[in-house]
Image (cartoon, rainbow, N blue to C red; front, side, top):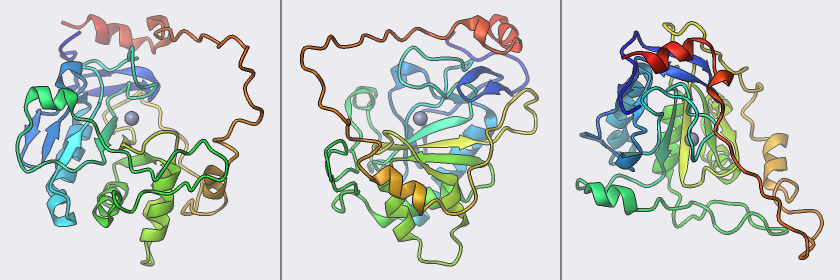
Length: 267
Ligand SMILES: [Zn+2]
């Protein structure tokens, strides 16, 4: 499917099991954004996500960030992808690079080939690692951009590396720390941050997640994420052990909500 389903806009199902009707493409270029990896055709979202990205990009320069490099949103009709993400299925998730948009238009080839830059100081999976962002890469402008995104009423959650969550907890010195609740530590997410919107009003059959636990999330949970526990394997691996081969199979269409059949068939 290279085009969206010509139906009323609707996010159907849950973030990791669903599809998208009436998807809208985020244009590949705007004054303050550029879409990356055009060949993937994953710049589709619910119109509310597209609007959110336009609004965020508009505010970016005032935050000291020239503009957004936008990674994957969803496929034209959402649904499971063969590579890359479990979620991003209902047009409400978007990856935004932690690399600033350059002051020129990238060519289509550059948009395929340029790599995002990791914010990590070093590897996370070694004992007693310093699980921090690299101060030569991380900047307050990045923190301001994520704060702006997390303060938006349309946003349910933002996923970042625990190292970034820590940097944000330290960055916010003002009284209002409520936005930090929306920013959740997760695996990966040190090249980009992942924005997830709440279900739009028009989307019956769209399932919100439970809201994050109360509080700024800068305490116990973060301490755990920054410890060896989640990262360092307990026992040294037996070098003679056969590696487990886990074949990732695409999710069967029958696993998706029933209305997704209509979405896939719509012409
Ligand atoms: Zn993502």
